[in-house]
Each structure stands twice: as structure tokens, then as C-alpha cells.
Amino acid sequence: MSRITILWADDEIDLFKPQLLFLKKKGYDVITATNGHDALEELEEHGDIDVVFLDESMPGLTGLETLSRIRESGNNIPVVMITKNEAESVMEEAIGSQIAGYLLKPVNPMQILLTLKRIIDEKRLVREKVNTDYQQEFRPLMMEINNGLDKDEWVDVYKKIINWELKLDESNSQEMGEILAVQKSEANAEFSKFIERNYLDWVNGDGGPIMSHNLMREKVFPFVNKDVPTVMVLLDNMRYDQWRVIEPYISELFKIEEESHFYSILPTATQYSRNAIFAGMMPSEIAKHYKDWWKNDADEGGKNMHEADFLGKQIERVLRRGDIKWDYTKVTRTNFARQMQDRALDFLNNDFSVIVYNFIDMLSHARTEMEVLKELAGDEKAYRSLTRSWFENSPLWATLRKLAERDVQLIVTTDHGTIRVNTPSRVVGDRDTSTNLRYKLGRNLNYEARDVLEVRDPHEAKLPRPNLSSTFIFAKEDKFFLYPNNYNYYNNYYRDTFQHGGISLEEVVCPVVRLRSR
Image (cartoon, rainbow, N blue to C red; front, side, top):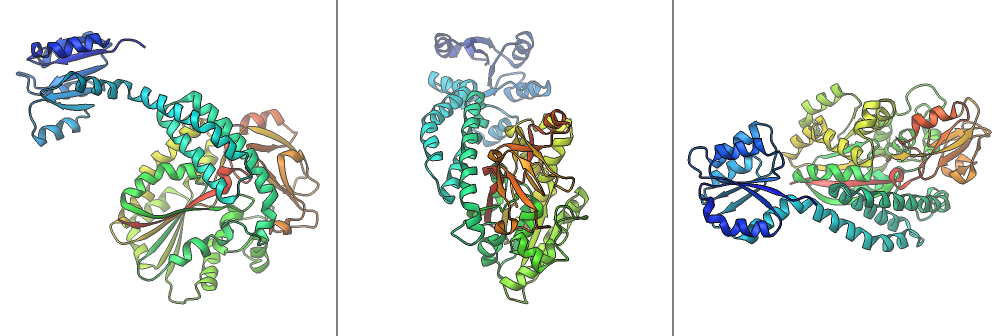
């Protein structure tokens, strides 16, 4: 590691000889200045200064004025303010100018050393600690993954993996991140086997988790009442890790009362999962009871045009109360979002309001088609970062801030997640075969059996059966389906894109969080 260079500016610098000698013995190079003007000149002359110590009360150009000049020049070098002045206003001004530390005189050598360690070595020390902790956790986590987990234990393992992803994001530990990615891939392989063994039993009523079709009955309706307005925000295509990166913003204004989960039904695609959520039924039941509202993959027209109708019917059927005032809002365009923001307080006039927000889904699709978004969201870490940046500046967050000023119950959830696909799997079907890359519905499908969960009779999975020979297949792990025609072109086009519809922890395990205004 190269030597660290410090610029220390103080009009009484001779009084700090013991500290300067201590730093030199510890391997630091120190340049000194006795006033602000000289400090600025030293910064210009030496391009390798790593940190600046500034006395606040120097004659001529004060420490705060020197700091202001440094920042005006566009220099973001870490600056530590050292002062005798304990006035709160001085501290606030210094902190507002983005200082890296604030020390009160007299300062002892260990204070200086600890400050330097925090500024210069913090990232390295954190990275080393996170790496060590993950190395210790690797073997127990792998044993869990291969230990025949149940539906709740799989959620716990998935959350552990996401927690490590976020920690490694912060520490910029690329090597450990690559190891964790392999472990996550192993987890998805075992989770796919778990779903394959149990899914059909679950949807036919045998000890399954809370799933899309009973989410509202189990996690939403029991908490809807006339005492406080309830607002449910469904972020289409939001994974658990994306919830984790926007949660700090929301929890500033809302207190989490319950953070739970549900399993998305298959296919983990909006047409199926979200209609199931709002209808409170599996897709085959929707198609049976609401023939005019359900559309199969090959049918013309929008597949989610009747969510509000489904919701209304479910409210009547489950709550059995005619006095519940409810509302449904779907945001698919920016102008709709601005309108929602403008009328945010109107939601308070309802007992129950649902907001479906489509941005994350649009982001994943746009990333496939736009090279600039592939650059901006090049990997999982960048995808999370882009989600955070969007949310922080979104009309949705502005709307939630308005709602938080009143007593409101907030429920945040999704319909399914998404996975970054990397492994192509060949499939052949007729021209009426569905187009999704993670599941296929069609006749006479030819495919790699090891890559899929096959459902030859869709009714067994509570899915519609457009004709007698219809078959569903669902991609496991990070597979994506490709036809033999133009195979290499489409392999390059779709590899490393975010897709949904198949079986993975990212797609199936979905957050549902209930909060209350603080």
C-alpha cells in the first residue's frame, strides 16, 4: 500500500510537533502550512495529498473559508476540521461543507490516528471484515442449502443471501461477490428441485405457503378497517433485494409492523400472478368464473385490463361489507404518476386504496432493449442502485411522503420478481407458442427436460388449458428459452437480461410489508 500524505494547516503548527513525529513513525508523510493561503497553494502544487487537517481559527483566511475555497474548486478531498471553538454554529457550518471529521483541541496522537484510519482505511477494513465474516458463513450456508429445506426455511436462506449481497455491495468486495454468486446459483438449483417436488400439491390445497391467489385474504384484508385509511402499493416486478434498498427511505416515515413474504404462482408473470392476486383465485378459476375478463397468452388485447374488476369482486366476496370505500389506481406512465402525486391526499378519503406502479417492470424490459440501460444496470449491484435512484426521485416517493403526514396504514408488495438469465435452453414449438423467455405454453413442445418443470395437464397447476394438447414448461434457475432459428443472435441479445416467468428464488419469493405512519 502506498504511503498516505497529509496536509496539516495551523498557525500554531509548531505546537503539534509530537503529533507530527508520531504520524511520521506510523508511516504517514506530512506537509505543513501556517495559513489558509499556503494550504491552498500546497494543494495545487501536490497532486498526491490524501487528507487535509484544517485549523478553524487561522488568521487571514480562516479554516472554514479555506474549506469553502477547496470545495469551490471542485476538490472533494477529505477534510478534518480542528478547532478550539465549541460553538454549535461552527460545527454545523463545517459539517454542511462536507467535512470528513471534526476534532476539538487539544488533540492527542491516538485521536489523529483513529481519524485517519476511519477516513483512509475504513473501506479496506470494512471489506476485510465482511470478507472474513462471509468466509465463516459460507460453509454453514451451503449446508443449509443442501439440507432439504421447507418453504419458510428457503425464505430465510434467500434473505441471508441477499443480506450478504448488500454487505458485499457496500464493501466493494468483487472476489467474495463472485463466490456468493456461485452459492446463489447453487441455491436456485436446489430451490428449483424443491418447487418441482411440491408445487402441484400446494396449489391443490396441501400445506402450501401463502401464494398469489390468497395473498389478499391472508395479508391485506384482515387489516383493512374504517379506523385508518389503508394504501396498498404493488410495485410490479420488485424483488426482495430491491425492497431492501428502498426500505430505508420508507421506514424513515413509516414504522414496519410486519415484514412477511408470499410465493408467486407459476408462471411468475404479471398476466398470471397479478390477476391471481386481485381476483383471489388461481388462473383456471378466473377463466372459469370470469370468461369475458380472462385472456390466454395467444388472445389479442391487454392481459391485465380487469384488475379493478377482479379486486371489486374479491372485496365483495371476502369482506362481505358494502360500506368499504375503495379505489384502484394503475400507474404506467410518468404523467399518470404526476397526477397521482397531485391527488395523493384523495387516497385518505377511502378505506382501502390500491396503487399498481409499473416502473420496475418497465425498467427490466427497457434494459433488454436499450444499450444505455445495459450500461447503467450492468449487474445486480447496479440494478439495485438504479432502483434506489429511481425511487428517491419518483412521484411515488413524493406521494408516500404526503401520505405519511397523516395516520395511514401502508402495505408494500409486488406480484413477482425477476432473474438475470445467462444459460440458453433450446425449445421448439409451433407458431402459437407463447413468447415469454422463462415459460412456454404451446402444443407439441420439444425441449431439454432437465431445464424445465413440465406441466402436461395445465389444470393440475390450476392454469387455463386453451386446447387439449396445451402444455406449460417453466425454466429453472437462470435458463432462458431460445428457438433454433437465429440461435446465436438471440442468445447474445437476451443473455444477461432480467426476465421473469420461471422458477428462481428471485422470481418466486416476494415481500409483503405492512407499515404505519410514524
